[in-house]
Image 1 (cartoon, helix red, strand yellow):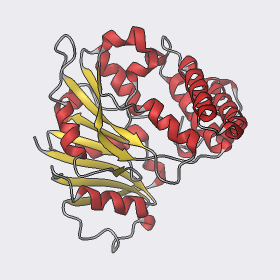
Image 2: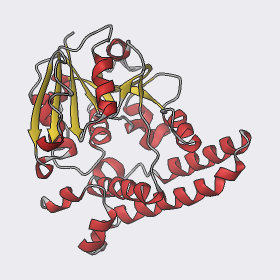
Image 3: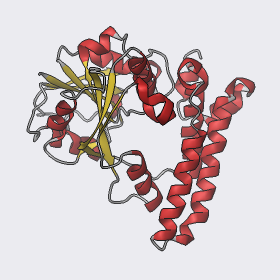
Amino acid sequence: MTVDVLIPAYRPGEKFAGLLAALEKQTVPAGKILVVNTEKAYWDEEKFSGIKGLEVRHITKEEFDHGATRNLLMSLSDADICVCMTDDAVPADRRLIEKLLAGFEKKGPEGEEVIAVYARQLADRNCGEAERFTRVFNYPEESRVKTAADIETLGIKAFFASNVCCAYRRDLFLKQGGFTSRTIFNEDMIFAAGALKAGYAVCYEADAKVVHSHNYSCMQQLRRNFDLGVSQADHPEVFAGVPSEGEGIRLVKATAAHLAATGRIFQIPGLAVKSAFKYAGYRLGKAYRKLPGSLVMKLTMNKNYWRNGK
């Protein structure tokens, strides 16, 4: 199968350079590395030149959208498999694409075809312990194929997928209509939910690994979760029947237990504070229609989403 890698970029730096270098060393090479870069002024032509298969298109901040920009990238490809990545996710080894492709050979329990395969995310070296544990919690060592039959037991986790690194069968992706073209966040989960309900399977491939993590401040977490709440409020057809609060509480409890068990009890108060900011942001996002526009603009991470006519 032919493979292209699709990357939306904004102010790409050293991690992006590392991503490009790692893609050149893959056991299964990408035919093209297609990049849609936001704001040409932030693109270093000299720094990123000489990469085999690299093609770049520039857009403005006003034109960027989490779903529409990735749909644009898909339209630029004619490969069988398109691997969506972010510009700060770096392959952990030479077998990332190889292992993603292996996920498409699997089937659901009723023979469901795999439409998408997402990778395991590993914490970076500078990552805090709570965030490191979150990566283990959300991306365990065991692979899994998820279908609509899992929604009852997994809840919102059945829809979990991440465009930090996720491969798609392009023909089936287009058949499903692609990503929702106007979304503040969560375009990957919204697509996965629709795919499961249409009878496809989504594979989590633990042997396909990228290094990707953040050390967000409390306010950054609040803003990120605000946008998460907005995306859920805007798509009740996906999220209304599968609330995510329970999963969030389970993560906090598991993280606190991990910190205590590893002698990091002094980090638990910080975890509690940051978790409160996350929950506040999420609840505010779910109720964004009741908030004044000026407050929404202070709470969101994606201001252009609102400026562009939300």
